[in-house]
Length: 423
Image 1 (cartoon, rainbow, N blue to C red):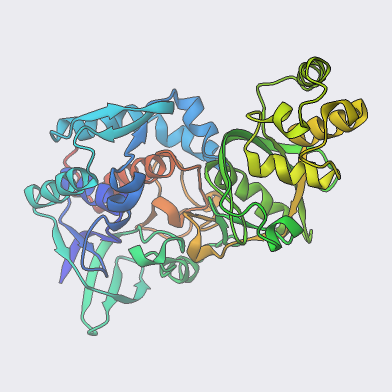
Image 2: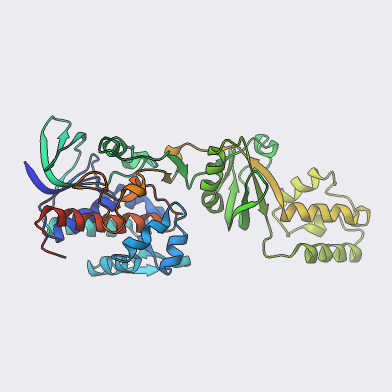
């Protein structure tokens, strides 16, 4: 059995690659080991599927801190605006939400997945579901895919789109790395990104802040010289093992990379009131204390920050909640406000890669041609999606990378077969 193009993996990049190859005139087969196509798409964006982001190209790439600059070349061929046109051209209405995030107007990921599956049918792509690839043999003229039942399929072009190792219940179990290595490719060290962080701080261990959610705080990662690496202003939550929430997920890859350098712990700074100036805050509190000397310090500070955090900070500085304002020194107020603006703590790790949203590391981008996704090492071999060493923040950025690289891989895989008829 022989095909022009075989795509392994039915996630966002594999679906897009299959459509692009078939539209380009190639006899195309898509192999997926799971029972459903687009499993990761179906759960993305809380089941609503954040298909891409409408921010300008530079902004999108800035939100892909893991080798996002590699995408400048692919974006010159097919970019986030082309993704929007692609879906709307298939009848999937999209709507824009905060920070440029694009969702289907239906609010259902099924709309997106079904449109892609219908397109595969329309283009007569042969889809093999519940089919596991046991091995890939590379040859001079073609490549051979060996399935679990020992059957063999020949192809002129192979697209590996099997994802990374994050969210393994969607089928991303790292199968493609060995096939890449067999072709001579380097797979850079894998690590979790967009992942919750762990801490051994006493307030984590004794659960005094467990379950506390903080809105719109600024979270900063420091390097070993105590210099800021990155700051994200979003929501976060204290958990029984450490910290989580959007700000934490965005900071996580920078923490993990510092830990990979051999550090045991990484310092983080939390600014609970990032839009307030420290000195103005101090003066406002001191004025309130002067006007209400008999009021308890807790009541003076009430409403400034969540009550549980306030209680923790007062206890930390050995201030009784019922202590009268007149008996609290200016120095103590300065220390308390400094803690609100510079709440320092250490993290010592993250949850494992299988608990992460995105895989860091993967097939080295130095060995892939940026504007075609073709291997620089093996003829007729293409990579796309999360198997590549490219990773971004959540918010439609990883799916954008997957769809863009999938599009290029599919078109160029078809082009190499000699049966290209153009899109």
